[in-house]
Length: 553
Ligand SMILES: Nc1ncnc2c1ncn2[C@@H]1O[C@H](COP(=O)(O)OP(=O)(O)OP(=O)(O)O)[C@@H](O)[C@H]1O
Ligand SMILES: Cc1ncc(CO)c(N)n1
Ligand SMILES: [Mg+2]
Image (cartoon, rainbow, N blue to C red; front, side):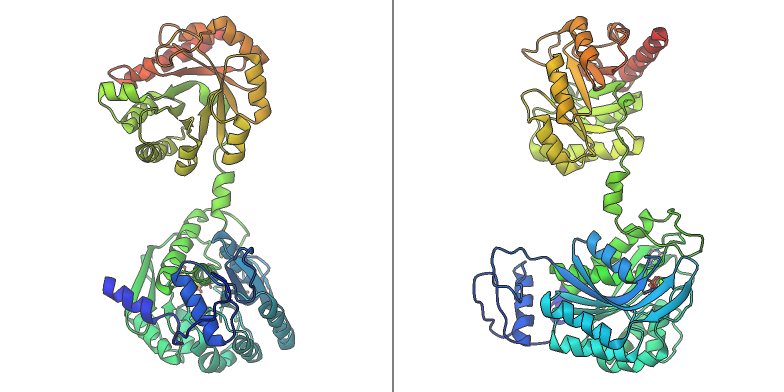
């Protein structure tokens, strides 16, 4: 495999032989010729950075850029709209040349209006002459004239890579580019392409109508299409009948690769092809080699399909996907609910060591016992180990819908994508933590006084922890504020409060019966973790807390 890969990487991407580049300033190059232009991109990619062909200003930041030349889909599942969203999701700037405007929805294609050839040429000139993209990706090219115009423009303004998605028929069966374009595809566009990504019907059309029904057929088709001239071919198997997996066949002229993912059972597959090709283009623009670009793109399509499998947009049977899953997963993260503070379990590395348990085992047991929120307070663990433990705990917490907070360590919270942090008065100020963590994460602050509570509210915290209510030996030199001190803080606090410090089975009821509405629960360390069976102790405490709320009512 390793040698196959190196074969692929060394032969598949660009044909021109490298020449000596003209470097005008370190890291940034002004380029004189087509070959130098391409070589600089290869070199920059090898160095992990790109040269900006038209700029010699070192202070400017390079942005990977894909130009998509495609049709507009009013339903926004495919076409230009899918391309922009896929590029945005992959962190790449996307400019657009629109070749046709389609009236389309989840039912089908109601109309197609082709943009005049000279206006496609004008859009191409506008973008290519002023803001050269790293990669051009093509979608719907509805006329021979438009294909020829594009090829002409690419000769005039060469780019690092050309990704051709030979869009012909929509999934609903409507013709988007008729057979008249096939000759110009075969004769002009495909020979310029670094990769072409036909689905089964398109591969068949490019080869004069051969039937394609098996993976073996897809391999033969990939080889035959490669003979037309593109450097790489990806025959997509989304529509392969009776296939449990979604299998795509990649051929680089030497080797075949099968990219497999499980087939996601969903009607929301409109635009998978556009999304895949745009994602390949985006990865190439960021500097990936072809094989890894295809691998990453395929994984992204699978993730988006899986994320979007149950979304309901439109009444037809071909729904769109939701490309911006990363943004959405933040937005849809369960918001902090003050009731989460009810039984707040705080881990302690010394106690875990004493009882011979891992952090993960301690967390698992507390959750099984009914803890409603977990805080990892690990003062004696190395950062790397803490991060790994946090990630493992997070998996368990997510399964049970229990939020996981990290004590003090904002870096560990960020790196593990934990639900938030709990910070003390001498840690990073809460407003700085808020700026670092963003609006979705939970922030709790330890407060002993009404002034602390007021500041926590101003700083954007979600809750406060108040104590020590009783003397405790888990925290040295910690002033005890007693039930009175707790009550004073609760009464003044605009935020929900969890009581902490020396609370256990014997005194939890007294705390909960203080009778202040924003006291939402108790945080405990020793009462759970300095015991032989964490799960049993958590269960017992939960019962005590439930009982005390009944009494309070
Ligand atoms: N149900 C599915 N589950 C997983 N992957 C899928 C599914 N359907 C398609 N794919 C993948 O999506 C990518 C696009 O393939 P497909 O054959 O659907 O292209 P297409 O027909 O050009 O798409 P469209 O015309 O809908 O934009 C491929 O990588 C394919 O394997
Ligand atoms: C505009 C447009 N481009 C591509 C496709 C293929 O999915 C589509 N349905 N519509
Ligand atoms: Mg399809």
